[in-house]
Structure formats: C-alpha cells, structure tokens
Length: 136
Image (cartoon, rainbow, N blue to C red; front, top):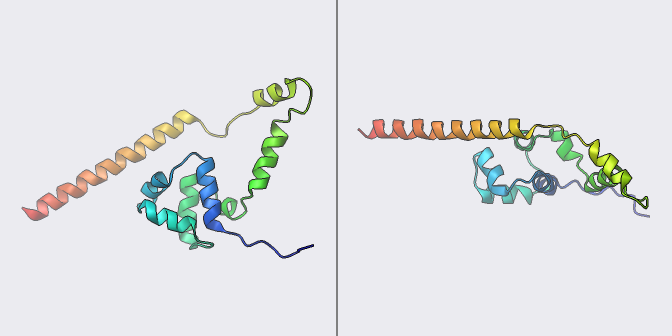
C-alpha cells in the first residue's frame, strides 16, 4: 500500500473550481488584469504565490484554504449524498432537491458583476482622457 502523500497541484485545483463555477479563463484573466495565456500558465503550475492565490480565491468566491484543500472526490461525495436516488421511486431525489438552497442570490451577483464592469469602463475612460490631455 502506498502511503506517500499526493502532491497538491494548486493550478489544477484553481482550474477545476473555475470550471465548476462556470467561469472561463478569459473572465478570470479579466478580473485579475492579466491575459488568458497568463491564467493558462498559472493553472499549469503546482504552486503559486500566496498573494495571487488570495486574489484568485476572492474572484472565485472561495477562501485560499478552500482552493488548497479542494478535492474533487469530496465534491462528488456531497453530490451523491445530497441526491441519493437509490430508492425505487424518485421521492428521495425530489425531497433533497426541494431542500436545496443556494448560498448566493443570482440577482445580487449579476448586479455586482455589472457594477464591476461599469467601474472598469469608467476607469478606461478616465485613463483615455488622461492620455488625450497629456498629448495636447
């Protein structure tokens, strides 16, 4: 029996959490202010700096510890335990689905995203105005 501990590949964990959250590399790159290629490179690394991990975690809506301790097996166990349809009828699935309450409000998330995008556009406009003034 092999008792060696598997190495923790932070980049792969970030990639999986990003995918589970329905976020593309481009969106994460935009939020970080880097290119998509930089995100791709980061997701290929086994370790990343703690300050970058903290930024990524905030964008993904999790803690840095959640990324470090992420386990796909645990996610599937939670899903299997939540939606256990081993009985002959679907009453267990229906009951567990009815009790599912997301921990976020989609409307609030949309408003938050819109406000961040709007602020980014305002920042771009201010930057371009400063460039125009500097050239005149």
